[in-house]
Image (cartoon, rainbow, N blue to C red; front, top):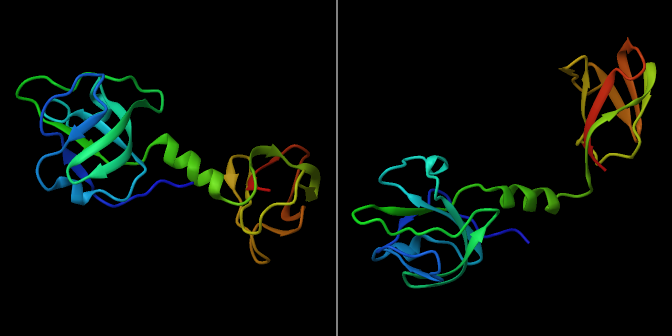
Length: 179
């Protein structure tokens, strides 16, 4: 299941929290910015680190409930560690941003399985993929250059069969696609 999302959501924790806290109170009125649960937030010291990727204590937390400005969270998500977010006079922000989990969830929701860097069987202008691709999902390369599909371009495809406009040696074509 895909997480709930919303654009341009950044909120701030109202006080400092230890690594064992399982609820966060946001600054007044900020809970209304958040989408329906569940979703992950990136939590970091935004005073010292404008970019969360630079904070050595950045943490991803799972938000399982929002009640007004109080979030119920599960700590240490996506290979991050539960950290203290409680240095005096620092602002700790939480942002709803793209994480590895989001990308993996999107890929899982797409039809078929992703095939990457398949060496396409064949030679000359006649080629065959190992699997039948989802229509429109094929990306084909020859010599590191992406080929353009279609009758008037670099190749055509019918099912698993590819016909190239130019002739290539065996093992020259690589393909990415969803099967």
